[in-house]
Image (tube, rainbow, N blue to C red):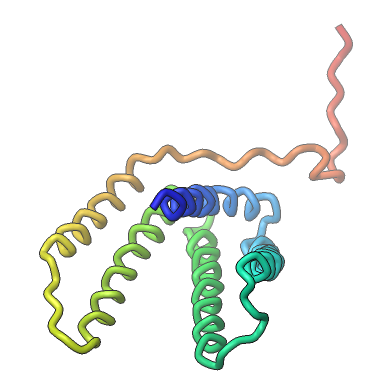
Length: 179
C-alpha cells in the first residue's frame, strides 16, 4: 500500500500547485487561453511519453480494445474539459479582480472527491446484489463542504509577481544613480 499512497500524495502535490501556477501563467500572458493551449501540449507530451514508457515497462502490447479505447478517450476528454472549466473559473472573476486559486481549488478538489464518491455509489447500486451505503459517506460529504469553505476563506491570497523589464521591452529600463 506504500506506492499507491506515495503516488496519490504526489498527485495532490502536482494538482495542488496547478491552480496557483496557472494563475501565474495567466497573469504573465494576460490571457487564460494561452496557458490552456500550453496545458494541452503538456498533457499530450506527458501522456504519450509516460503512457508509452509505462506500457513498455509492463510489457503491455500497443493495441487497444474498442471498449478501452472508448473509455480512455472519454476519460481524457473529461480531464481536458476539467482543465478548460478550471481555466474559465480562473478567468471569470469580475472585471478588475485577480484570479483566486485559493477559492477555486478547494471547490475543485473537494467537489471532485464528492463526485467520485457519488459516482461510485451509483455504479455500486447498479450492480447485481444489495448495497448498503454507510451514513459516514454523507457525513464525509457534508464535512467536505465545510472544509471547502474553511480552506477557501482562510487561505492567504498571493498577488502575481510584477512584470519584469525583460518581459516588457517597450518600457526603457530605469537606471540607478551611482553611489
